[in-house]
Picture 1 (cartoon, helix red, strand yellow):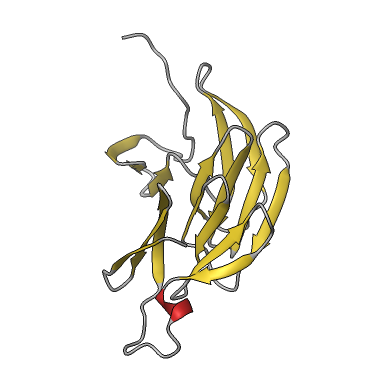
Picture 2 (cartoon, rainbow, N blue to C red):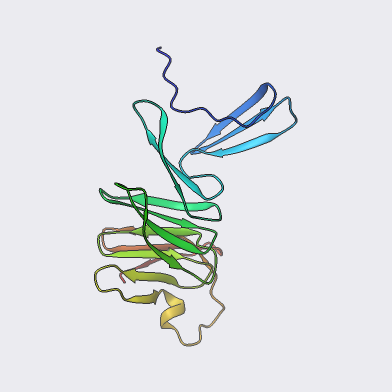
Length: 180
């Protein structure tokens, strides 16, 4: 096999003695008595890096989040990222600049978008929805439609948009499917 590293992760000051890879996460252990956890798809310390897969070099670093990046998704023109810094940022992939940004009251744990909407889970019992075509913001989910729920609703942790449906996963194990 030809040598073809995609990228190098420099952080240990002594020999690397252990490696474990699972999903998008790599954990490395070293003789320097440290463990490092690497998120191989999202940025570290709020930074998102775009890689040139042919050369294995960083093409551009997108700096703007002040907390860990929790989700990212892109189309032909934009990259959308969410963060525990309570924001979503839309990046212009051609220039690397921030095209738009949205602030939330709580850390954003999950985000997804389609051609019309950006949806976010931000520590509440509702999904925050932003319609990119008309600029409207609203809440979706049982916390938005029930005046007084029979039992307290759990916070939404993960969301997806798929074929016109919004799928939510809550801390209490409940999965909801909505057409918002």
